[in-house]
Length: 281
Image (cartoon, rainbow, N blue to C red):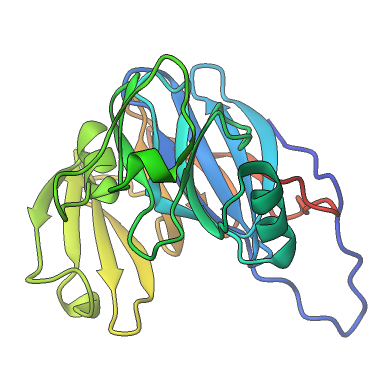
C-alpha cells in the first residue's frame, strides 16, 4: 500500500535533494498495531498508525517541534500513545498560557494514535520531567515528580503513577523488553561510549545496537544473526519483528516488510510534507 503525499517540493535543476525522512516505530505487545514517527524536515514529525494484520497505514497528525520517540510508549492494546514533546516557540508558549495558565515548552501527553491531540497532559518544563511508560493498557507511570502541579489534563479511566524519589522509568528499555527484546550487553554507562561499547539487545535473530557518543548523538545499528538470506539493514533507522514474525524495516524514509528472504515496500514517506500553519497538540 502506498501513502499519497499531501504536498511535494518542486526541485530546481541545481537544488540539493532533501535528506530522507527518519522513521522510528513503537509496537503494541498485545495487538497488531505499530505507531510510526516520521521526522523531517528537522522540526516536524508525523505520526502514522500501522495495522500489521491488514498492512493498512493511516496518516495522522503533524507535530511542529520535537517528539522524543525513545521517551514515548504505545499501550499494550495499541489504543493509546504516550509521548514526550518539546516546542519552544512563542506561539506554543502563548497557547499554553492561554489554555492552562502556565509556561510550558516541554510536556508529556496521552493521545489516541495516529493523532497527537492530548487527552492527558503533564507539564515537563522543569528540566527533569518528561516521558514515561505503560504498566498496562490503563496504568501509566509518568516521569513527573509533582503530579498535582504538573498534571494539566487527567485522562479519564487511567491510573497515573509517578516515580519514587529521584528514580525515572527507563522508557526505551521498558518498551523494548515488553515487546520481546532482551539485553545481551550493557555498557558501563549509556552516554559517551560510542560504537566501541554499544547498548545491545536481541529479539530472535535481530540484534539492536543503541549508540550514544560524547556529544549526546544517539543512533542505532541493526544486524541479522540467522543463517541463510539476510535482510538489508544497512542504514535502517528502525527495525523490529511483529507478532507474526515478519521483519519490519524503516530505511531511507521508506517502510518495508521482509519475510522468507523477500522484501516488499509498504510505503515511501519521503514526499509527505507538513501543512502550514501547524496544528497545536
